[in-house]
Length: 241
Image (cartoon, rainbow, N blue to C red; front, side, top):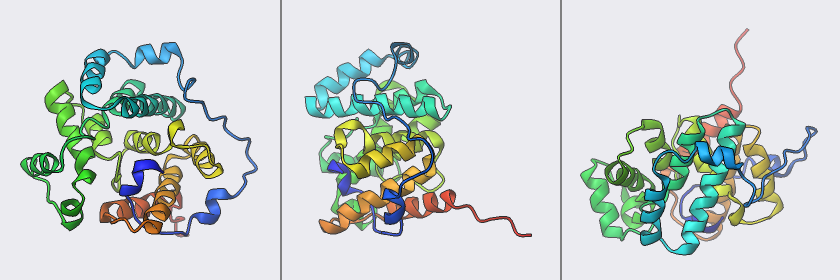
C-alpha cells in the first residue's frame, strides 16, 4: 500500500474476512474530489490551515502534499461518519506528515530529545519515526497542544494498542485515501472503515503486513501489537454466564 509498506507486521488470519461479501447494503465510498462538503471543510478549517499549508508547500513535494490533502479529506469524512470531532480530524490529517522528509539523523535526534526509547528497528529504519516526530513539529511549530490531535499524528504509521477513535480515523485515512489505489481489497477496506473502526484497523494492518512480508521489510513490534489489539477489539470476549 504505497509507502505504508515500511511500517507493519505479519499475519494472515483476516484474509478470508477481507474479501468476504456482506449482506448489509454497501457503503458508498467518496471519491478524492467529493470527500467532504464545503460546509464541513469550513468548519474544519478554523485552525490556521493556511499557515500549515504554506509550511507544507515549502517542506514537502507536490505529490506528497496532494496525498496529505486526500488524507485530510478522508479523515474528515470518517470523523463525520463516526460522530467524532471534525476539526480535530482535519488538524491531524493535515499535519500527519510534517516530518515525512526529515533526514534520518534529524528524526533520531528529535526522537531522543523527546525521551523516546529507540529499539533496533527504529535505528535501522529511522523513517518510522516521522509520525512521532511529526507530533513534535505540530506542537513546536504550530502550537498544537490537544493531546488527541498529537496522538493521532503520532500513531498514523504504526498505530498503538488502545489508541483513540480519532487516531484510528487518521491511521485509516493515511492508508486508505483514494490515491492509494482502486483494487477490490482497498475498496473493501474503505467500506469497512465506514462501518467499524477497530475492524478496519485490524484488516488494514494485515493487508499491509502481507506486502511487508513479501518484500522483506523490517516489522516494528508496535505494529504487531496494534494488529492484535484491533483484532481483539473487533471480537470482544463474550461475558461469562
